[in-house]
Image (cartoon, rainbow over all chains, first blue to last red; front, side, top):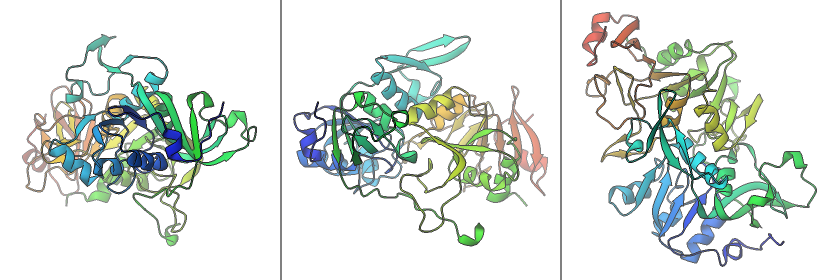
Length: 234
Length: 207
């Protein structure tokens, strides 16, 4: 069992094909698999459908794959920070399937847990419910949402051991665990690969069973909205 | 004088009770955190955090620590982190007592529209649809009218809905209104604003 690869491109070797469905972790620019996204840009793989809460910004994260027109369709909850995304969507060049954020997270989690569908109250009576089965439980309406089964998951964690056990840091965890779970193959990038046994088993956030390939690398970790308070407010 | 942004936020803070777990939306709702005083309130950030602290001091920003508005924040002694599926599990599961959200339009039956303007503005619903469907109580904070002076409190929303029949209370610059089965009920008027003033500025039915 060798999971550790030298580079992002090597870790993706043999896993890519045009038209594939990729689930990506991250929220905004926080906890995004930036090295694997760069490797996808280099690979030239095309016609992608990407399930990810956001689509990065124009020159960072998934925004890079939009600029190169490698993405055919996004499954997202929020695209407000990305001008190129808006332009491609409004001109009809890009398909966009809006998913409520919790529905997107649960669709990934469900897919990873072998659950093809679940009922939720989220979106009942809105355009999200159009075309979806409605079922009533105890007098309340719920809509059927389907699990996401991705061809590939790309995620970012803080630390890993060589067996793929992952530890995340603060709010950079976000969509990474459910995104990792729902892929047939999951590639993770981390800031540090530590020796086996050096992570307390009780502190592992995602067990290595979900992680098939692994790289370590330098991350830019760009901040989207730098907000601070003045010292005298303390 | 109608309430300003800070006065609306202060009024919204009165809705929160000691011990509550609360989710605050982007914009004026974010300001509510400044007015909770001594009340023991735990703020949820739906990207995976309970116990959200204030903005960091300069030089202490952490790219791994942001709120749902992507702003840098800090943690508190009570803070916990979790993934997005768990975060929305607690929202959908009714564990969050209240959400304070902004709105583009609200209807007299409690319909809320705050996520898109067709053909013009496509941002997405983020976690708003999950929040309004799952939390115990939904309080909307917004200006009573738009920049053209048209009422944002309507008989029926014209924009795509975020949720149907989900709003419990509306706090605007003019006052506080509750959604009831018969229509909207004026609970309170802002300083210097009359009941008539609110009725005139409102397209929805007031009972």
